[in-house]
Length: 223
Ligand code: C5P
Image (cartoon, rainbow, N blue to C red):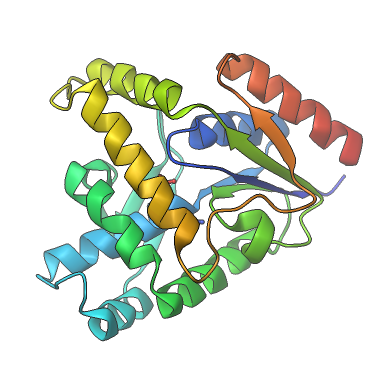
């Protein structure tokens, strides 16, 4: 059978990309991390020395740059104009600026266009903030993943420790996550919100495997 479109949305660090990647693997679908795309635009803007309020120049850049993905372990590799930026887009400077860039309507229009192109063939798991509401409103499976801010901060903290970048305290991580959620939920265009037909999944007390199994069941029922 031809694959379907699976949209996974939710707040920062809810485990979307970890789960989405595993679900894609299980069904042999393509995985697309749309947050990485906004992060690449932000990185490009910073590298060009642009201020975050240089809206017109950021829009121009978003249209010019080439964002690329390649499968990789433990995470997908991300490219900006052919150069790998997988690690660069996860730095704190990107965390604190990406929501500003992602709130620019014309930047969203360009990313949405590219995302629809990637998803057109079906057999896709796409994660982000506005996939079920805006990018793929007809996706037959829509998941809205949530967890308490405390649990999300804790997961990120453990992840950072494993990567050897435990420079930010648990408290500060939670503050950053809450601030980014607030910005993403209150912006004018495509704010983070649950689509009416999305299934809400609270992962606070679930393991990664449990979440993957739950979503897999939903896909099998829908296929
Ligand atoms: O998913 P991730 O946390 O990497 O996303 C980084 C940022 O990109 C989000 O905080 C949000 O501002 C933006 N984003 C978005 N729409 C998406 C995916 C991400 O606005 N579909």
